[in-house]
Amino acid sequence: MLAKLTSDFDSFFENVLSTLYGSLSCDLDLVKAHFTRVSKYNVPNGKKVRGRICVAAFKCFAKGEASDDLLRLVNLVGWAIELVESAFLVLDDLIDGSFMRRGQISWGLLQQREGHGLIGINDGLHLYISVQQLLMAGFHSRPHPRCLEILKLFGDCANSTCFGQALDILSSSQLQSIDSNGMLPCEKPNLNYDRLRDATVSRFASIAKWKTSYYSFVLPVAAGMLLADVKSDVLFSNAESILLKIGEYFQMQDDFLDVYGDEKVTGKVGTDIEEGKCSWLIATALEKTSSEQRDALSKNYGLKDPDCVRAVRKVFDELDLPSLYSAYEDQSRKHILDLIKSVSTEKKDEDFTDPVATKLPRQFFIEILNIFHRRKNLESYSEGGGDGVEYHDQKCYHLGAFHKLSIYTYLYKGGVDFTSPNTMRLRVYSVPPMDCDDSNSFSKLIVRSVSSSELVCALKEYLLSFVVVMGRGWARGQVVGACAPTRALPDLCLRAWVMVTTANQIVYKNPELIQVLPGPYGNNPGFAFLAVVEYFTDCTTDILDILGLVLVV
View 1 (cartoon, rainbow, N blue to C red):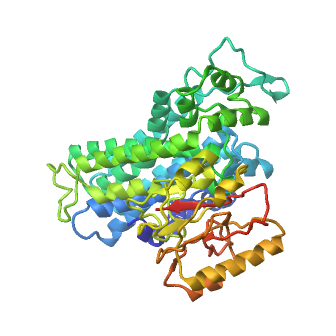
View 2: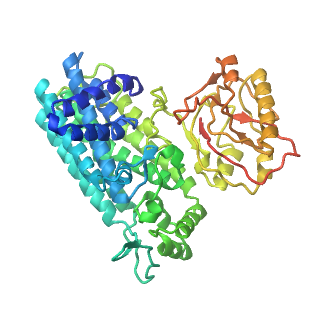
C-alpha cells in the first residue's frame, strides 16, 4: 500500500512550499530563498514513510470514498509529519555533532561551512513552527471536525520527543573536558565511578518510547485515524500499544546500524560509541560481559578516540552481538505479530469508524512492521518507490553485519536454504569489507543455487574474466541482486560472493528468471547478480570481501 502512495504523496510537496512561502512580503525575499532551500534540502530527501503511513492509515480506516479536498488535506497533514521529522533531525544532528544525514552533509554543518554559524538551530525551529502554519492553512481551506484533536496530537508527540531527547542525552556516558580553548580530548575515566550504570535495557526502552515511538509511529497512524474520523477509544489505545512496540523495534535497529551499518548505505556516520549513548548494543552487552570485558567497556565507552572505539567494538564482537541482534529481532517481530493478531481483524468490510469498534485492520499494521523488518538502511523502507516494502513473512540475512562465526552458523549449517521455493529475491545494499582468516571453510560449502545453464555459463565466463582483469582472487563490486529459483545447480563450491555491476545484458537475456531490484545509489543502475562460482585451487587470497549481501528467504 505504501509504495503505491509515493508518487501521489510527492506531488503535494510543491503545494507545501507555496503554502508556507508563497505569500511572504518582498522584503523577505532573502529569507524566503533560504527557508525554501532549508525545506528542499531536508524534507523530501528521505523515504517519507511517516507521511505516507498517515495517508495509508486514513485510506485504511476511512469509510467510503474521500473527496479530492479531503485527500489534499490528508496529504498536507502527512507532509506536516515530514516537517516534524526534518526539524528533529536538523536539531539532533547539531546536538550530536553529526556530519552526515541521508547520504549528504548534515544541514547544520553545511551552514557552518558556508559561514552562517549556528543558523541551523533557527532553521530547525523554523521547520517545526512551519508544521502549525501548514496545518492551520490546511484546516482553513478544508475544515475538519477533528482538527483540534489533530493539532493536540502533534503537540503531544513533539513534547514526548523532547522528553525522549533529554532522557537520551542525560543517560549518555560521554566524557568531556573543556578549557578556555573549547573541547579537549577526553581523559581516561575514574574506575571507581560506574559510568555505565544507566546503560540498561529498561532505560533503552524508555528512550525508544519517548524519543522515537510517539512521533515516528503513533503520530502518523493516529493522525490518519483522526482524519478518517475514527471514534473508538479502544482502537486508539490498541494502535498505540502496537506502535510503541514497533518504535522500540525500530530504535533497536537504528542502534545496531549505527555501529555495524555502512555509512554509504545508512546515510550517516555512526557515533553512538563515541557519544556514550544508552543504545541497545551497550545495554545488551553489559548483561553478558565478563568482569574483564565490562572493565574494557567502562574504560573506553564514550570516548572520542579511535582506539577506544575499536576496543568497544572488540568486546561487541567477542559477545557476537550481531547474532544476538538477529535472534532478538526475530523474537521481537514475532511478539509484535502476536500482539497485532490479538487485537485485529482480517475482515474487509469492517467499519472502523463505528464508536464501538474493537478490532484494528490487521494487514495494515503487519505491513508497517514488515517495512522495517531486517532493514539495513537507517531509512531503507523501499527503494525507488517500488514494491520492496511488502515483505510479509520473508526473512533477511545481512551477512555484512555478521561476525564470521555467525556466517558459519547461518550458511554452513543450513540457515539459508537455496533450494527452498521461498528463496525468491535478494535486497541490494553495500556493507563494509569483512576479513576472513579461514578461507578454506568457504570451499567446503556446497550451495545449491538457482538459474538456467545459459545464465550460469554467462556469469562464470564474465566473472572469471573479471577476476583475471583484477589480478587477484576475488572480484569486487558494489551491489548484488538475485535470481528466482528454478532448479538446483550442484557442485558449485562457494569460494567467493562475487559482486557484478555491469552484467545488464544477462538480465535482458533472462528476464523471466531474474528479479532485479534497484540499487541504493542514484547513479548506479543496480543490475547485478548473486553469483556462486566454482573457484579453482590456484586462485589465492587472504581476504574475503563481502561488500554487499542481503539474503531474503
